[in-house]
Length: 297
Image (cartoon, rainbow, N blue to C red; front, side, top):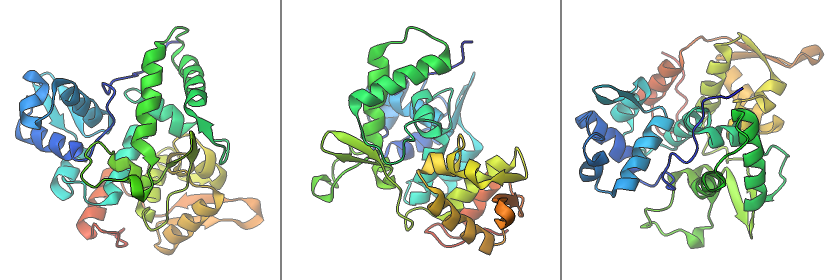
């Protein structure tokens, strides 16, 4: 059965520093910005880069295309109002989550983070990722023939966007570096790549709660194993193991947001404070953007 999917919508460009800011500001000021020369003048970039920015805005759930033009979604409006220059690393986590869950417009990203390459800390090279990605895309899309060049480009851009670089190799003036490298989800060692666990001081418990809130929208209780290994779970999307997940669950329970039952081997998590995903984002920004605990209305 064929499914809706998209590969190589990025024009071979990953998200670069400043692109999200440029994009949401331009769309807010002129919904028709991408209708004329693909926004090259307003964004100050070439045609292919402007197309890439347009693609990433949509893939991140920041914009929606309508007949009259391109408009900010509720999520896009919140970022425009509270962190349009993407100064808070939690904003990067939100963008990452929206991209990684967007199976229709960022299919390779969704497959990689949602369900794939989960063999613990096993390292892989670019060729191994390509073979895995091509197979997973074929299984998901139902297409026997896929453009190998497009799959290769998706793998290359994904690695470039997320691969952690050593401090000696980072040039603060290099605008080609993706801000997503700061999430520390991938690390390159020689010619091989390894999934890494983000540092706790860069990952606010709010981010885990945000993902859990969408899981609770389907059921008011979730098994901890599902939270660790399930599709689109905090464990999968954020590269967190069982130890890290339990650490964040304890923090969220202390805040009165969830109840955790580990007795008699139940290992169940129950929703205690019901709050919509957009309300969670709004509350976070309104209560203090730089990492303070802000959960309540």
